Length: 365
Image (cartoon, rainbow, N blue to C red):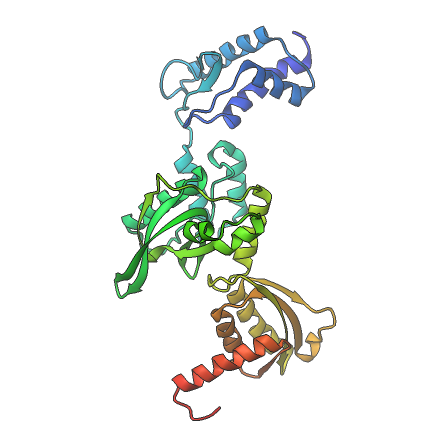
């Protein structure tokens, strides 16, 4: 195999393997068998072990000649029967790579496809547990307490560790009515210009002893980070998790989709609505504002008559109080009338309007 074209390419495949599949910032390592297996997957050829040793020496010699090793004399090192790699002089660290992605994701008018390119360039920096929505907008004033809280919760998500939080209600600049909660954090979400951690409430899960994964979702809650006074590792508490990662992903997605402006609801409903505008533009203006607020699944009916200012839609959403806030906002547009074709929603919306009328000190509607 010494003179084959694949043999000549082998050393490049190996360089790419160590660069993209091994992380210089953790304890990741590989064996010679791992390398041989990777090369066989890429080339269809099984290479001899001694050729692997020779190519590792050549790669180290190349890196040394261009002065790219940040620490030590060798880029690829051995530890027993395993190979690790050191950091390169100009290499982007995990924190730096994630900072770049987070910064791009929270900056207006920047194509977020750039994020995907960075993730592809540095795959070891973005493990499957990394939550790209753990962000801060560029115009938000950051305090050290919030940074520490975010870091602690992200670690809990990635390491599957329970956390103890002190949770309360904000009154001015202070938190009141604080209480201790044990949670199993699963994801960070950004909504209402604020972070939320989505987690299993350990006390609620233990009280029910849920046997099926779908039942466990009943113990899933949102916790607003600016209402968390403190986050600690809950050393003696178990991390309560779904047995199936696939079901966990589905239930987490469903939980987020059933939220309206971050107010959760256990049961999703489908609301059929008609937006009647004097013109096509009137209907579109109202619909755009409503759709932006909802962040939920909205489908346009096939027989809608937008040319006549009639827009018929289906909205799959949760029964959260903010749903009715969105409906009320939709009703305030000039030259627009809405019809809600769902008795339960109509009944709840009527109660919402009565409360609003009472707050406005109206004797009658």
